[in-house]
Image 1 (tube, each protein chain N blue to C red):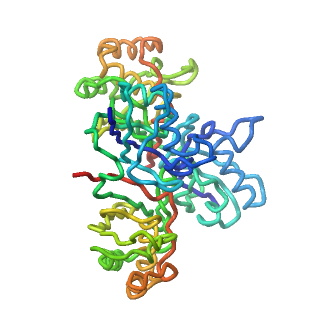
Image 2 (cartoon, rainbow over the protein chains, first blue to last red):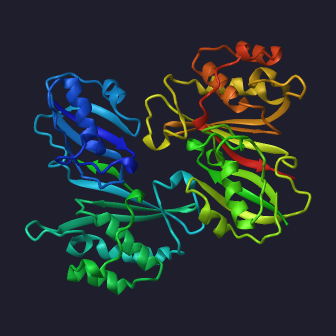
Image 3 (cartoon, rainbow over the protein chains, first blue to last red):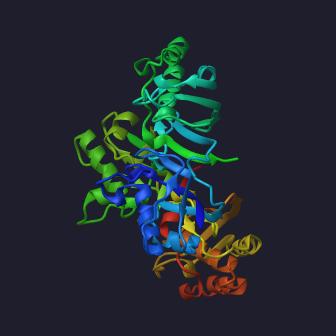
Length: 243
Length: 243
């Protein structure tokens, strides 16, 4: 049976999604879930996650798939998982479904706390601003990235062998009491790409970088011209899109 | 100078608000804040909090007052506090202001997560329901407690010397996607009172207790007739009311 599951997690205490060779399985979200499934199925289970979130990054709707002969229920899997990882749904998928290869897009959210608006309950889920932000300027800057571009300048360790072209379909800047939520939708995001886009949008909105500089970093594909990488804790993988 | 401050804290890792004799100051919120103020003022500072929240209970708007000759700024006090305690405002109050004695009321919120609606980000800030709740029944039960009553049956360790009469001015049951927020406003609340009211409302709403039983517990002043004490982590002191 090919299972598809939707997973929510608080990434604060993990070294990211991906199980790492020679490292403790308990340190990664994939490793933790595989441990539980392996125990329940009585044989080694490997799961395929749609996206490899970094250390400290959260998920409200990560998707993963795996094969097993066993019949599993949501309740029993959750029972053995730590309280910061929850399976929200677990259902049978068609035999050809693969969480990563079939994904046609992803939605990420990055949460900013406005200058002077502290919120202790969001300290692990947001980035505290030290400067005032000009949201009109931020929205103008976000337009630079819409559409298909080579994002070599907006990722960490750009590969020369693999394409760094991605299509960003939408960037929303949503303001609410004390918070700014950046919502990114695209067909895929490179390593650290959402965090570097966020860092750049913040730099432009706080007047530290010009719109031209942000544009130049994209055109030149030069990482050093783009803004800083925003801290991991503000980022959440919200949804994985499939046809 | 008499200072008045508004404080926000995540109570998860503390043994409550109140500094305790012979115990580590770092374990309580009052103790932590007093440590910082004592250091900044160069002499022992004692603060008066409006309410003594229990271990694990949170605050969005706790109020405290203290005297000092020093001029303090919000920024420097926050700089030395741990990241789960934030002073939101710090200003001079009249010489007779006392955070507890002048309070004429308090607002508390208790957050419930509906059955089947997990949220890992709220695991320390909500109580996960295992049963479906009938919110009409819950609202009906909440009416029992409105007005002035002797709440001896709805508190822990009722004193025989001090009055256990309190006035509950409002109980709102606010439903949203996956959550139920109970909002209590009253002139004061006894030890564990909001948590026992919440436990009772949940018991009635899940069909474990009748409206008559809830009423009887109030009339008889008999703790064993009321519902269980709801877990600390769902409770937040939202606001302290002054004239």
